[in-house]
Image (cartoon, rainbow, N blue to C red; front, side, top):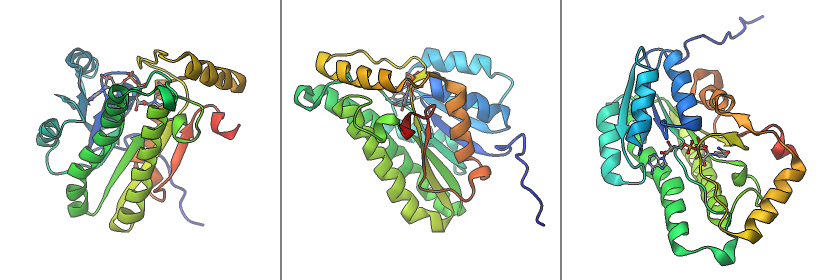
Length: 255
Ligand SMILES: NC(=O)c1ccc[n+]([C@@H]2O[C@H](COP(=O)([O-])OP(=O)(O)OC[C@H]3O[C@@H](n4cnc5c(N)ncnc54)[C@H](O)[C@@H]3O)[C@@H](O)[C@H]2O)c1
């Protein structure tokens, strides 16, 4: 019989992990978990106050903060300068909601903003990090998508399209890079208690989405529960997993 695998308590010891949107919610909980498990965290957020609060809470751990807009190519340079040449994991978590607008109500501003922050950012930062992972022959990327990446009834058209696009980047990346030692996966959270702004701007869209979600009745999760799935996929515990889209949603995706 082979020796069973035991989850080490400090799965990120000696590792550098970039986490975007680390100033709040799921990103904050992921930064906490990685730091407590020995990782060097490069915590990225557009909101300096939130980063300062994270630094204060994790002052006994190795946490570098970078105020950056993840959708801006210039700001990606600052993130990479802070991370250095060895990046063990990248968690593409930063994202924004839409206003539940159905397709005929989507305006260009909402579409551009949601696609830029939810999709362009994932492409830009992954593109910057991958050459270093290729050089090392190892690495893990975890993209935070949504229930809206799995179905059409969890958000508006722009957010739903953006999260489906990130699944595309996840699968394309996994198909190409897994044989080269780089795993790429996604976590699809259901409703999670965070600071995300989900302000309905469409009566039609909100009514339909809330009715369906209400009928399913999945509970609202805590951010740390989603962080557990993210850190699992980012760690060597998931050494045999690439190209997965893992729901963390109290069973919503099964209904
Ligand atoms: N909360 C939920 O119910 C839920 C459900 C499904 C998916 N998600 C996804 O989880 C991820 C994290 O969301 P959350 O709920 O923790 O939200 P949150 O608003 O609590 O945290 C997101 C963080 O990202 C930062 N951010 C926003 N735009 C940025 C940018 N351009 N550059 C850098 N940082 C930026 C914000 O300042 C914020 O601190 C998002 O991708 C979101 O789509 C959330």
